[in-house]
Image 1 (cartoon, helix red, strand yellow):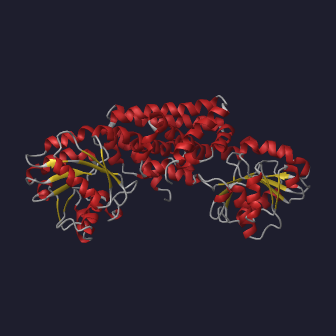
Image 2 (cartoon, chains in turn green, orange; image 1 turned 45 degrees about the vertical axis):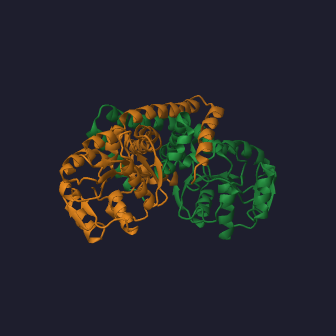
Length: 275
Length: 275
């Protein structure tokens, strides 16, 4: 459901591993669906959610997260007993329970978040190895069906992912910090250049380019993610503001030692990461 | 003067292009200077600034910017009439006039800022092609000697740089925005993870990695840059805070349309850049 970067990559990866027979695509834009069919990403396509899911063993929600509820409502009547529904959204929390509740009898929902894709989007960026080595967080609830959970973990493992099972609310708390906050900050950084003089972006080097790369991400997608993870995001924003404020105070008060300490603390943690 | 990433790369690049006879290195750490000599980056080295510059046609200040004045004071007695002094520092402004004033009679200072190096540092990262295709900003003052200015422009061009001549104060205003601000923000982002739980950095993906790559930069170097460009930095920090605040307000007030607009504005400008 949704044949963009993630949806098309799931299709390509599953086909590559030989773990699917037939792939049906659903989307809002026929041009994109046609392209998906021409390039062999999907075998057939539908512009009606219920028609797309008819007879499917597995349904993967790959639209922007803001549409999950709507798409699920529309596809509900087409879902086959015994089928499993998952997603690739960057927000989990209460959305998982909500989608779980929307499933008809005998259909199980298990939330997933493969950490892949980055700032890219669109079908043309899709890759069969997108999930290879990627962390795939699977977020069951106390109500989740054990077999469906196993199947979804096996799905991500089979396309090369490193599966980690996690509470959906803890997921959102963690990703507000390590993913959603950096996006907001990157958007705000580019907008700061807009506010002052867009032409000055021409003077930026590799540092600015790296720091703002994720500001190329889809505004629609990140609007949805920001709204869904509102409370966690507002919390980490406050802590970010404190940290930036501490640095700013050192600059303002000519506290060289304090400033070097702030920078060194960040450098040390960051050097511990790969790349 | 200073045989780190930039200093060693200037040496390698000039040697590669055959535009120097002999290269003398000055530094504070003998181990590093020995390594520079062993690897052929310098022909000889000194731990006394005045001894290092004796008889040189060209002197390039490559220590952290915070040491430029001190090193210049110490090397002054060794400078030969007719020699030209430049630097590779990321801050210009009043520092350029200050260094200019420190030059003895017949020695000319011309400020330079090659936009190269990124988050890397240290002699082992040095590359003879570091300046190839890099923008090199040269910042003369009304007092600058015309021939010295031409020579320094020619120097950067000869090692592959794209030279741009700019007022030193405009330089600092622009780089506060496109370089210094992103560094502060990246350091603050990593420190936000420190504040909450350093372990959570393990969940970060490519977005966090890109956004915080420059937080691996040298704390000492960036302390100096931040202090030198204090006023411009405080100004752009305020504008950044406004921009982040606008995004935050949209999240807080569930203003989906406003939020998407903020993100789209940033995306559009950022997509216009290469990479």
